[in-house]
Length: 214
Image 1 (cartoon, rainbow, N blue to C red):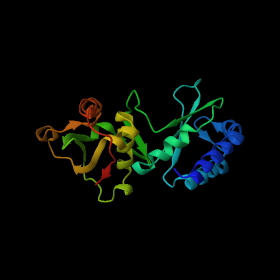
Image 2: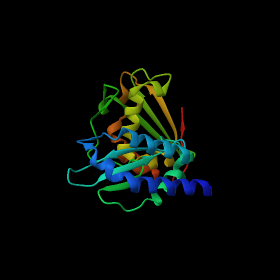
Image 3: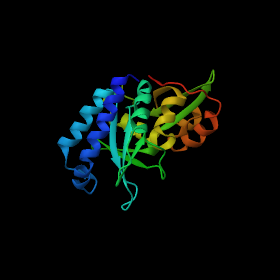
Image 4: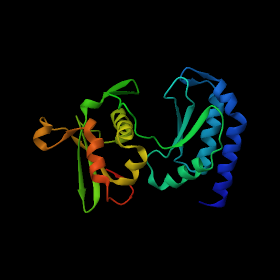
């Protein structure tokens, strides 16, 4: 990473240190009211790497808030995420993490753009071909434009919860979206909820690689 980016990273954390109390005090249940401040964070991150993203989570009411950084699925920006979080200061009341980790329990449904997407509606196949993992997601009438369908965003959230965002980007060579057959079992497909076990069995020995989304 260029020295200018390193300085931008240091500047970002200096900005966070000065303003994090203001942000945390603006929290009302699961929302932050300091919109201008969040916009400043996003603008600064975009200058470091245009793919950098962040969001907040809290597993327990009494636990610290987590600020989770990612790169929207772009493997070329993994290093930017790791460099950013690696330089994070230790601050009270908030924890900084790289990428969405596996989640238990896995959610049964996700609401995206006011559309409820249920885990049981999606099936998968996972194969190792030439020592590369090929994952196919099956759904009813897959969209021709992936970024226009809230179901695709929901599935990506499910995948993060099932196998983790970092491993999705670095272990899966190709991700395909295909039409769900009438009887998926006849085609050897499995419910998406079972992906974690299959993935963990196959991933050992698979070299770290990027992802190509088709």
